[in-house]
Amino acid sequence: MDLEKLWQSTLGEMEIQLTKANFSMWLKESRPIDWREGTLYVSLPSNFAKSWIEDKYHKNILGILRNKENSVKKVEFVINSQMPAPQKAAASSKELGELGAGELDLGRADPETNLNPRYTFSTFVVGPSNELAFAAAKAITEVIGKYNPFFIYGGVGLGKTHLIQAVGNEIVSRYQKKIKPKYVPSEQFTREVVWGLRNDRIESVKKKYRDADVLIIDDIQFIGGKEKTEEEFFHTFNALYEANKQIIISSDRPPQSLPTLEERLRSRFEGGFVADIGYPEYEMRVAIIRSRLSEAGRNIDDNVVDLLARRLRKNIRELEGVLKKLLFLQETGHTEITMALAEEIIDKSTKNLSKRVGDAQILKAVAEFFNVSIEDLVSHNRRKEIVEPRQIAMYLLREISELSYPYIGEKMGRDHTTAIHSYEKINQEVNKNPALNQKILTIKDILYKS
Ligand code: ADP
Ligand code: MG
Image 1 (spheres, rainbow, N blue to C red):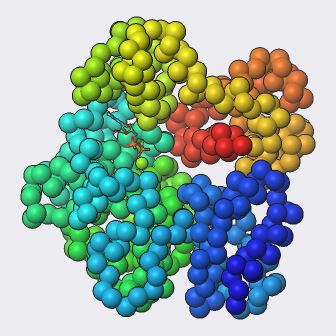
Image 2 (image 1 turned 180 degrees about the vertical axis):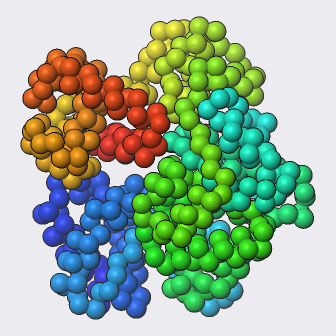
Image 3 (image 1 turned 45 degrees about the vertical axis):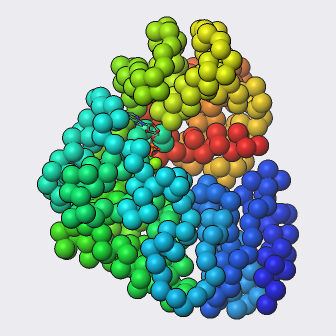
């Protein structure tokens, strides 16, 4: 069978069904990479593309494929496949490690534990938004298995990966080689299981994880819904759990909001210790900036520190990014970091978006994300599936484009009080609801890329 041809003609049909922006964002860079026992493996450029397509277009694509080639039973999406060619040699941990580093900087991660030594407790700033998670994480390193499983959740860029890797690094330094932690992003776990199943190496994949004393799985939300990997994860989880090994899990949302996860797994998670990480408060943001400055042996004006901490509130990664840019400019340009320069860099990183995208694009992105029409968004339909997208649209019009409430109201066929109410409702809820935060970040991501 000519995979390339099959996939190209499938894409041809999808192209007709999708908008141009959607098509080029999600599918254009896809490639058929393998065909095995009725399953077509297709690679995609990013996590976002993968979860998006699995959510929205999976059935559609499968339908088209089956129409063209009735031996197609399944289609599996993988991220930019770096899977090795099928081979019978034993799967070494090195080989498995090469399956793709996901978001992790493998260049710097320890090959045995997969931990990045940069993430330690000592560089983690503690405050009200993360103190419970931090205390539990520390307790685990003292009494391994104390809170099992340990489940930590929170929005993007708030320190989940840092904290769970810090547990691993602390265990390495405290117990030397006697207790073996292993870190894996759930995307990588999935890739390895798929690879193992296809190449008859599943036993060595299982062994690799069951040999760990402390298994740390990052971003578990990406596991749900993939039967085989979920099943494999469940078995590994049980084997470790029953052997009293420690399991640490991170997620962008609480266990009860992992909709695709099987009930038995979800209830296991809920039965462990669950802690969340929220948005850092002002003092913490200042402390993080100061700690980064002292690590770098640099200094900037107090007023600039205050400005950064006031303006960059919802994502520590973004805060660090802006700080890095400023320090870079200071170093290379020998310029003072003035308030004006800082304002400019903050604007560039946060509002870059507002200059490039118009309100029509915002509405379109929201409509596409939720699979509703723009007419629905501006209609008076009160169905829940429409009300949430509509409120998010108003929120984004305000947040990104800084439009006035009366203007937003008019645009949405409503009065300005509705616009205010919608903005405030979402603005409050986004602080408490990681799933909502994730949706909004994804929509922004769509806008950034368009
Ligand atoms: P997440 O996994 O929740 O998306 P990360 O753990 O990758 O977030 O954190 C993003 C960045 O912010 C990392 O560089 C991390 O070191 C830093 N960071 C997050 N929380 C803290 C904290 N409490 N103290 C110091 N740095 C932090
Ligand atoms: Mg992370």
